[in-house]
Length: 427
Image 1 (cartoon, helix red, strand yellow):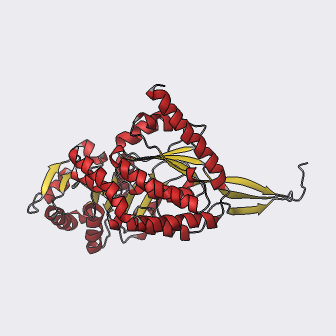
Image 2 (spheres, rainbow, N blue to C red):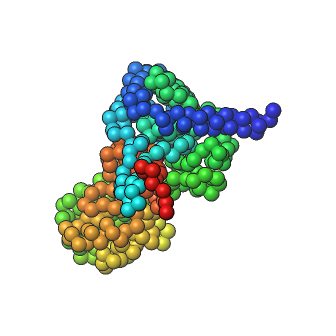
Image 3 (tube, helix red, strand yellow):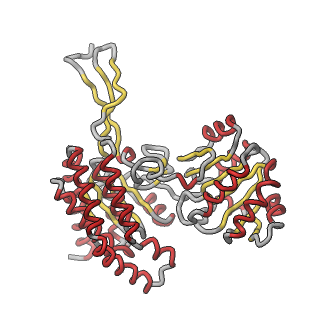
């Protein structure tokens, strides 16, 4: 057999097993799913030392290969990280089970009652990079939502992912659920991704989580639906009427609390009425933290007087760039209309915030900004499944169909129509 046929056989086997497990998971009682999640949490805590040993192999290989320090840091399974994912499993176990819920039941003049029932999607494929904790997040959400999943993590975390996945399968078995409900692609062959995204007979949806290049490739090549977001070019807009002290704290947090997440603010818009008062103060904060500011002419003229500020002219490309770094674009706008137009033109429809004391302006921003999360007087860094009360998230979607924003349990389900009758016939 050739390597290609070996890979075909491997992926087909995973697909068939996942499809069979999905049928069992859709019918699994809530108690069994919750037992599996609590067992998984206990195993993660019990096996912290062993998991760290496997993780150390990935860390050593990554450092030897010259991976950048932030990438290596993403790989690390510290006791705190492991305890956090264990806590996430327990939180998901404590959440209501969405499967089987019937809502919106309405009685029709014919006598029938029509409603909608929440059901699992079936089988999802998850393709992700770097962070091995995603293995547990995806598995726990799959278990609770009654789905089966096929996970394909990055080659740089292969030993960590295998170790974590084995604990997932152990927890499923202990709870009387099929171990095949969560499967891991154990080969680092990149061709496995191409196979996974082209198996509509076995996989119902693909969820990529990683860099823009990975997500673009999957969106272009997949033969099954994809839940995706390509960029996180998030905006914070300082309105004409605003609490400046609050705006300073929130803007600082939105940009500098952590630079690498997709919900960090990358573009700052400031109404011209507040530019002279706000920009020097936020500029001083950014200067102290080494944040480079790429500015429109008006903002540059103001920020250039800030001691130690790194101020450059913004290019057209800067307005649509996700930096994931200590860099921010800054623009002074003449009106709320201009701010909204700028966000909708250059943003990535991920997360955008207005800081304002004007209620009508806040409501206009909420209605008219076309993004998956829109905020008033809050940091964009809150755009996260855990912070939204979803227990965990499997990703953030900027699509408009099915799931939008952080994708938690309900994002891994769909609705089907149910009709309840007592012998009615159509005349």
